[in-house]
Amino acid sequence: MDEDLVARAMRHYAEACTASGHALSGSVDTQCRCGTVAARLEEDRDLRIKAQIFDVQRSRVQAAVNAEEQPDASWTFSALVRLVVDELPDPFQGFDRPFKRIVFLTSALARIAESGVSIDAIVRIGLRHRFKRSAAILASAMLPGISLTGSRNSIPDRTLAWADLLDRCIAESDPGDVVDNVAETESLGDALFERIRKARIGLFADKVAGWLERAPIIDIVSWRYTDLADRSKISEDDLNFPGGQEAVAWLLDRFSLTHYSDWQRTSLYWELRYANNPESTAIEAGVPLSVLRQRPAHVGTVVDAVVTRGSSPLDHENLLGNLTFDQLSSHVLESLKNGRAQQTSELLREITRKYPTLAEARSMFGFALIPVLPDEALDVIGRCLADPENVNVELLRINKASALWRLRRSAEALVVVEGLHVTGFDDDLWLWKPEDLESASESEDFEPGSFNAQEWIAQALKILKGDVAQ
Image 1 (tube, one colour):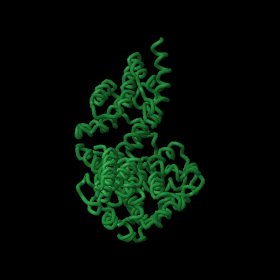
Image 2 (cartoon, helix red, strand yellow):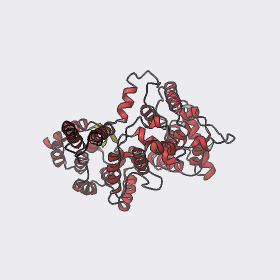
Image 3 (cartoon, helix red, strand yellow):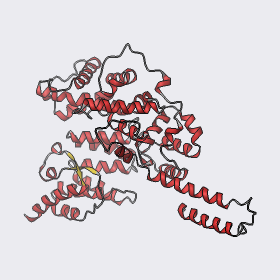
Image 4 (tube, one colour):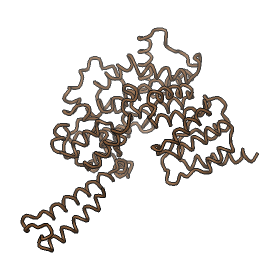
């Protein structure tokens, strides 16, 4: 239904009804509600429009027009949350500006606390899984550099603390399993992958959880690990919202993600309740109504999102145990960056067998197969292209061209690339590097790169036209 057309039609009817002395409705002036109904429909239409055009990233960019100005009272709640979500769980943010990072994040957290929202709940509960994943990568990724160079002088102290913690946890959990020299292992990539695996489970994961529960916020902001065995846990009242962990997740989804399709399913249910009854939902969640009102909510748009998600057999939540789809994507990318296309493609093969209708996982599977089994990659990508629900058609065609290129079918790859239409495709994409597709022989030699689609096409055309001309 076109709400704008209905609202306009009702307004015209109300004006005509009033002009006729309310003869159109058959009511006397004091009983006719034509004007009230018209006003309500107009208000509902305007609210829907505001809800549809709300953009989290725009509020973040607008707040930080001057990159040197730290968060203050002029920042919206959404801009503050987006800054915290983007930078706080990422230890690799701010290595070149650690003091500025601390000032900005502590200022943002202070502003959030001033609004009446528990920053302990946001940081220790809402961002818990991201911290655990990042801690595993941080502790693992730096150690190979130490082993290969034999020097710790160039590694920041805060990073060494995490790497040393992981060493101690591995030694305590499995004595004799500590790798002293990465060069003696099968490969650097294998050693790194194995260390990340060990860091995601067991004693190290428990240590990270304990640190996140007990460490002062300033230590968490600066990623400073210290043994906090004697420090008492934060009180349960400070650590959570009255609405529980689902309410925390809803608040983070609401003010850090623009599109409902990216939200957790439970967050959509909270949003539907809020859109229908803001006051009682704010009390139940334990979030100030003044904060929640900073993002418009419309029942109809939320219902549409719930119906869409409800018709999907699986979304990005709980894909593999506690692993979300976003976490899976990050894991896949990190593995591919470290030359583990073979192992990554096997992982994705199992996922697509378990969830055959999950289009995003199948698309990733096709991408991961390109360096390993390009023939199979073509089949998988072809299935994705045949799916009418798949919206990433041009991305799939880039991957199809990459698979053909890997098979040394340069002329066919050139035809696909020349037929690409990516106007308005502004987002950066992770794609296989054209130079690797041209020259790399082993799958371990491949490394994905971040490209604008037009940039990748220009590089690919330059190389492919040279191949075909020969």
